[in-house]
Image (cartoon, rainbow, N blue to C red):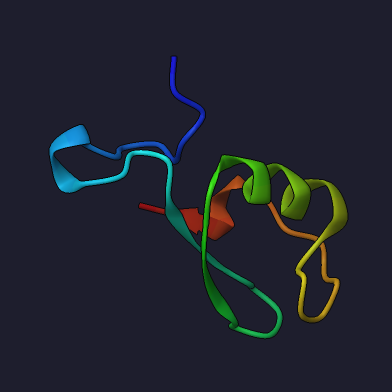
Length: 58
């Protein structure tokens, strides 16, 4: 099973990328699964605020 973002359709292109939007600073970043795991573990790479799965959309 893919570790990309939920709801991503393979026909849309890369299934491994999604957009992270920080709930604190509103920074938007396209991320791959490795970056997503790092952000969930360490927080926003811009402001270090904690984030949840809901901060990632396809």
